[in-house]
Image (cartoon, rainbow, N blue to C red; front, side, top):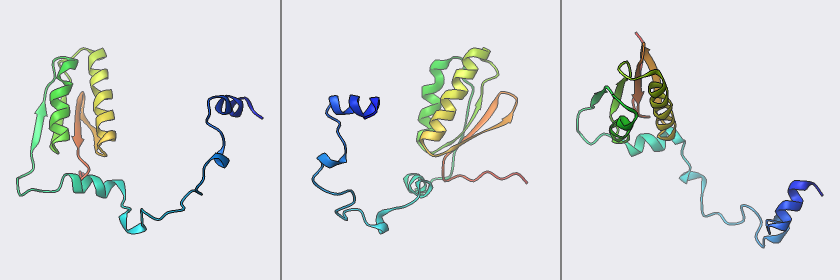
Length: 128
């Protein structure tokens, strides 16, 4: 028995033999309920008849991430210019924005020096 299994056994996290039902025994979740993450995100931000908004954010300090995050979670495209921030805070802000975009199934792209575009899942960006 390996060390990990010994620790799991000690903590009461034994193997699969301790469960009564086999995995996948009931069929509560049919194949018709499954949909890709991108479609779920697009449904979350479906058009409500309002025109799309693009919000320009020029954060001065890392605390301004809340404002940027609120706009993005509301389904708006955000252009974030971190040129007026110190390098350390700008790096933290971009890291936060990347995590936010990933968590909300959106995208982040650098469009200029210290300028980034955050787009929700239902927005397509093309270069023509």
